[in-house]
Amino acid sequence: QVQLVESGGGLVQAGGSLRLSCAASGGTFNNRPVAWFRQAPGKSREFVGFINLSGSSTDYADSVKGRFTISRDDAKNTVYLQMNRLKPEDTAVYYCAAGTYPTRLSYRPAGYDYWGQGTQVTVSS
Image 1 (cartoon, rainbow, N blue to C red):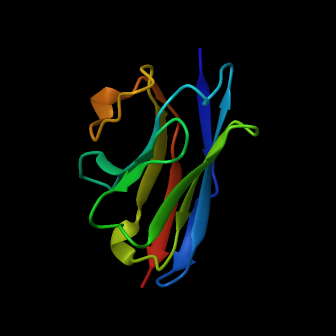
Image 2 (cartoon, rainbow, N blue to C red; image 1 turned 180 degrees about the horizontal axis):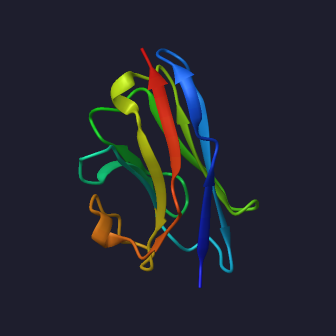
C-alpha cells in the first residue's frame, strides 16, 4: 500500500516561489504516474499537472502553465511541484496522487488511487 506525504506548503507573497514535495512510502513511484491537484475553499478539486513514469512527459492546467513544473526523483521516491510567480488565486490545499496503471495519465481525481493528506499553500497579495 503506497502512502504519500506532501510537504513544503506555507505562506508566500504574490510573485514568490514554493517547492512542494511528495514522498512515497510503503511502495514506489517508479511504476506510477503522479499528479498534483488542488482544492480551494468552497471549490471542487482541480487538476494542476501530471508526470509520466519516466518524467519525459508532463502536462499542466492552463492556469499554471509556464509557472509550475513537476519533476520526479525515483531514487528518492519523491515527486516535486515547483511553483513560481505565485498568485493569490493559487491559494489552496495541494494534493499529490499516484495512479495504479503505469500508462494511464488522467486529468481527473478518479484516475488516481493513492492520495496524500494535502499541504496548504497561501499566497498573499
